[in-house]
Image: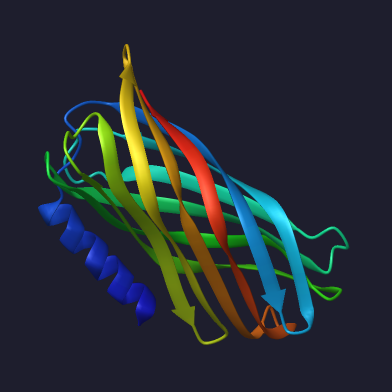
Length: 211
C-alpha cells in the first residue's frame, strides 16, 4: 500500500512539476560534527556526506540525485553507512523560492550497533527548498532538506536546515552552507536482527557547486 501511494504521488508530481531551464550538474560535500547515540552506546565523530544531482528541462522525466554519508565510531560500536537514490521534480523555481519534491530508495549499506550488524533498503519521500533573503543568485539565504520513511520494521527521518551564502564563479555557482542535521532510526526487528533506536545530530559545514 505504501509503495502504491509513493508511486501515485510521483505520478502526480510529474503532471505538475516545473523542470530546470537548462542542463545542470550539481555536486557537493559536507562535514558533519555528529553525536551518535543508541541505547548505552554513544560516540562523537566527524562524519562526511557527499552528493551529486543531474537536472534537465525534459518534462515528465524526473531529475536524479544520489547522496551518501558514513558514520564510524572509533571503537566500531556504532556504524552507519547509507546512500539515497532520489528521483525528484522542481515544483517551484522562482526568485523567491525553490522547492523540490520526490521519492527514492534509502540504502543502509552497512550498520552496526554493539557488534550486531545489519543492512537493507526501504522507499522514502524527499523534499528540499532554498529561500534567498535578497538576491536569488547571490548572498544569504535559508535552505532545508529532508527524507523520511516508515515501514513495519523501521522508521527513518533525516532532516537538515541552515543558512547558505551563494555567489558566482564564471559559469559555476557556489553555495556555502552552515546548519544543523538530525537523523533518527527506529529499528523493530529490521533485517531480522536489530531492535533499537539510533540517533545522530550535530552542526554541519558544506558546499555545493552548480554547473
